[in-house]
Image (tube, rainbow, N blue to C red; front, top):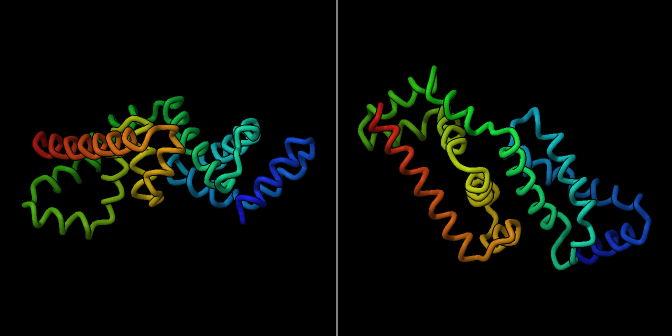
Length: 193
């Protein structure tokens, strides 16, 4: 039913009633803002969310109405976040920052623990968030967005594949490779400390 309502609104906008776009904005701004906020730094999330809605407006003729506008815009949000990381190239800067200071000390302490102790330590530490962000910063923008979509947004692989405009098989393979890359980074970092 939501898909039908969204399709009616988009058709009205495409016919020239651009004021109706604000209905979609009001309806999905919080949801898309949350998707974006999980993928970019907090200070940049509002600007990136705005970019998502501008891009969605420009691409409105491509909205088929088979899914909700929010699901369709999620794909645009994921691609916009990937572009953000490409444009800013922050993941390269974070690589250097992560290997110094408090994070390096934390990784050294973590690597020194036995496997069972290490797992328990990671679960109990608030700094697990730092490690996760550090790991995500090691990935390409597409890999990062894919892992976030799977584990943070809990999206089905079919929706993720549609958002990235990939086949389901390609999505599964890319997810597998991204997880392996993260595992290898952890193992390499642990051995090298």
